[in-house]
Amino acid sequence: MGAPKINVVGAGVQGLTVALILQKKGYDVTVIAKYWPGDLSIEYTSPWAGADWQAMASNEDLRLQKFESDTFKVLWKLSHLRPKETGIIRVPSVMYFDEKTENTVDPWWKDLVPDFKIIPQEELPGSAVVGLSHTSVCINTPHYLKWLLSEFTALGGKVRKQFLRHIQDAADEDGSTAAIVNCTGLQARYLGGVEDKKVFATRGQTVLVRAPHFKKILTHQGKDYVTYIIPRSNGDVILGGTQQHHNYDQEPDFGTARAIMERTYKHFPELTHGKGIEALDIVRQNVGLRPTREGGPRVENEFSKAPSGKTLLITHNYGHGGYGVQTSWGSATAAAKLVVSGLSQIQGAASDVHGLLDDLWSKL
Ligand SMILES: Cc1cc2nc3c(=O)[nH]c(=O)nc-3n(C[C@H](O)[C@H](O)[C@H](O)COP(=O)(O)OP(=O)(O)OC[C@H]3O[C@@H](n4cnc5c(N)ncnc54)[C@H](O)[C@@H]3O)c2cc1C
Image (cartoon, rainbow, N blue to C red; front, side, top):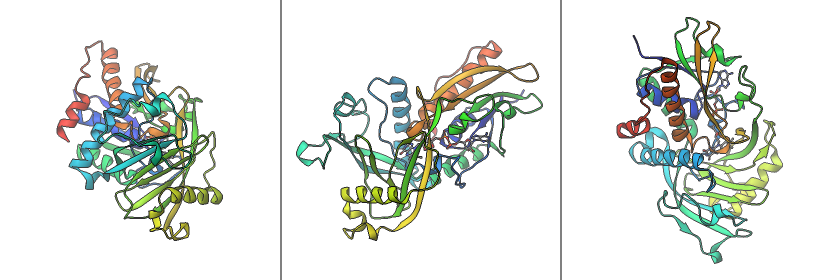
């Protein structure tokens, strides 16, 4: 008997990471998706992400902390071992907050990241009341997605470009599919058999500029706005942003773009060597829709009946909001473990879920 066949729906950062982990574990994996690395669509969030690792889990949210810390360890390692192939770079990061909370004053991740420091009050800009600095990673997402895909196919992973109306359509007609992994991001809201209305868009508008000299991450979380700067390995820099819940508008708003450029320039005039925002070298105005989910990401098993009457395992892994890249390895590993344990449950056998991520690290 060959390796169990797993069909992963979605070629975003979540789907490709789960697929890579399962393929490495020895499963026969096919990724099915409408959009692929290299495509740009409002229905495909991953290429629009900055992306950086700046913790978002609260001090109480142990599940999200685990996703973020597992992911930081892998991305940190990749930034050292494979920076060119992956497009992941190490950069200094500053975070400013206009509100003091447990999460900002004594963050859970202070011992995880290198060079963690609390910025002295007298050095805080404008309205900020807390400032934190550390060294982090930036992920050039369009580049990184292509790397994930190439690693997956190099191991024999298969791909199929297809739009699915129903999650069960991901199962092969001959009944050979052992499990489906649902990594459809925001589209989980509309996909037949899932239609999860807890998932909604958080619109993020950004301005992509060319500034190869600029290599720092900034986030300034205000009470009703967020300002951020994320450099990419190719010399482009993402200026952001907005966090507009339940807003599905895919057109950039030019007033918003101007406000973003003014806010980011105020923090770092060196973006244009002090020559003003008119000197920004704009590559593109972007809009992406974050797949936010009430209650956090859905990472769980569902046992459903296939049309053949067979029990079909569906492992869900979607709804990662504004942190789908920085949780990718942790969340995808949790999903991969659920696949292994879910299949064992169906077969009535013991499951071997240990070492999934450890195996991978040792082979990077
Ligand atoms: C402006 C912006 C900035 C961001 N910055 C960061 C950041 O700094 N750090 C961070 O961690 N995260 C960031 N994010 C969030 C991050 O981008 C998302 O959480 C992540 O990309 C979600 O990935 P995903 O794989 O779940 O979904 P997606 O990337 O949307 O992938 C979904 C996949 O499923 C496929 N699919 C869906 N439905 C179907 C169907 N019916 N049939 C076939 N295929 C289907 C799609 O074609 C696609 O391949 C940012 C997002 C935005 C918009």
